[in-house]
Length: 191
Image (cartoon, rainbow, N blue to C red; front, top):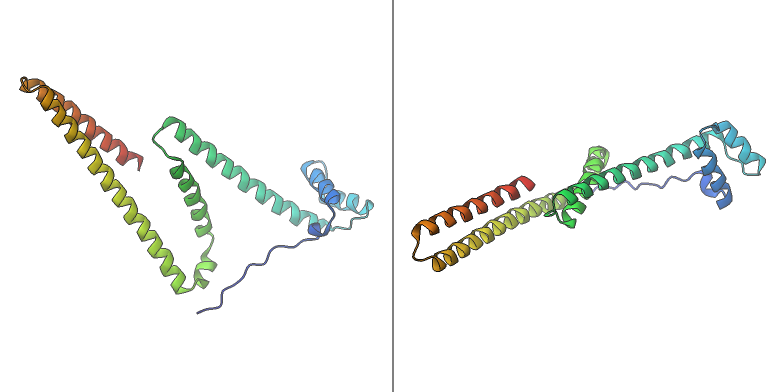
């Protein structure tokens, strides 16, 4: 098997600063009136040496984290709005949507990791995806069969209760069949 690349955590000068220094740095970065040079100089006056470049790199990382958090917040808000308007959506579907979005973003930027991924691992991932598709198809078939069984049960009870009026049985049967068809289409559209 090929050698896998390991990712190193980013270590910066900011990590070596005491908590009060990081607090000062973060508050100065939050104030757009300060330049990186001014922040570096203010930190040096307090006895915490940090270069302008280190301040800039730290600010970029912090902005990237803040942007990711805002994106996740927007996605969560949108998914909750969907859940409020469509009561049939389950929490697991929302969580799956968030996870799929995150994985899609990760995959879109992971060409190098794919190039170095061992063939066995890629095969296992492919099998897991195929299992998921089969499971979803089974669930869809099970739901369709359950709807059909409920429809047949209701129609049997209607026929039993209204034995003397074939016209009423036909009309009620048409209503139940139309409702079952409409429900099946709604579930197809939700997926």
